[in-house]
Amino acid sequence: MDIVDSGEHGTLVTRRSGPLDGEVRIGGAKNSVLKLMAACLLAEGRHVLANVPDISDVSLMCELLEAMGVTVTRADHRLVIDVPAELNTEAPYHLVERMRASIVVLGPLLGRFGTARVALPGGDDFGPRPIDMHLRALESLGATFSTAHGDISGTAAVLRGTEVVLEYPSVGATENVLMAAVRAKGRTLIVNPAREPEIGDLVEFLNRMGAEIGWAGDRLAIDGVDRLAPARAPEGYAVIADRIEAATYLAAAGICGGSVFLRHAVAGHMTMLIRKLTEMGMHIVADDEGVRATVTRRLSSADISTLPYPGLATDYKPFLVTLLTTAEGVGIVTENIFTGRFRYIDELRRMGADIRTEGHHAVVRGVERLSGAPVRAHDIRAGAALVMAGLAAEGETEIAGAAHIDRGYEDLAGKLAGLGATITRR
Ligand code: UD1
Image (tube, rainbow, N blue to C red; front, side, top):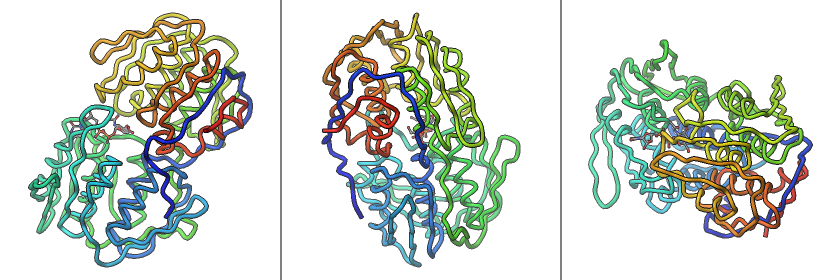
């Protein structure tokens, strides 16, 4: 398995660009495929996933599955995942530490084997990423947990369906409960589940594996089954389109101007974002093939507040802040999901952005021009946002830490260059 080095290597170099023109293909969703890969652990046999993005987080999840005894082959945006009858049910620290999404193996391992040991994820650039809700929810199904030596060990002689109330619609907790409850005895009702499109994709995939999951109003009802099998899809189960990747290219059009078509983007998964960008002055139309954005003038500022789906995703925020840096007027940005997610703002300031932060708020006053500077990417989306800023800046911008961007983007530089942006990789 080829692993893209997730160290700090790689620098992207940008120059002021625009107007952009052309078409970009939106790939499969990172935040879906990683969870579908974990779901494969629930059933012995050969699983095939299609529309799999070529990103290094997928490589890491392959490594994690392989460490458990699974065989994975990857070619042409497809994954063939052969899951044996017996698995090593441990997720080691050196992998979990590099990718927090690894915690979603907990649910399927408990669901199928009644035992799991997963290294506790540490903090990251977003601040702490607790898993207390995951554990409380799994405990209500009958699992018990203990921690030692930095690992969390869970056991469940039998999981029993029950009402699981999430005090917050956590994406990760909803996924872990879903993947445990599909094998529990009886019915589980998740009250206040996350409703992100990627949750819908996981529900669809699990149902194709033989699970019985449905929406009961705004709750998720799961009737446990005794056995699951690989989804029957010879060409592979196609992962949904990545709405965050789509948002990235919408932001590129917003900041550089021009007309860009995002093939395969699903407007219905980005309703609130499209509304916000339209309010700022972008013209966005959608059809079955994708989404077209046209920008002919300097954008106007707007206020932004992140919320669980269908609200504006926290992952969109770095792009929106970047758009505000050169928009006309003042925008107030409020982060409600991860309070620590403002570190890239120091980098934007180095490029001449006028941003003040206080607690989980940022006040962005648009300036006429940003100024190119050496900056550093500290996470995937913030890294992509710095690239956008570089496309709006006078002179050259060097974005170090491009490996962070590779975790979630397939060929960001190539796709932007295809639209006419000036960007190269060193
Ligand atoms: C989050 C985002 C998701 C995004 C992903 C990757 C939300 C609601 N979730 O998912 O859209 O794609 O990051 O960037 O926007 N929390 C706890 N205890 C827990 C679990 C979570 O306190 O056990 C808190 C978190 O600290 C955070 C909030 O709940 O403030 C949302 O967390 P959650 O949805 O679980 O995060 P991810 O699954 O990582």
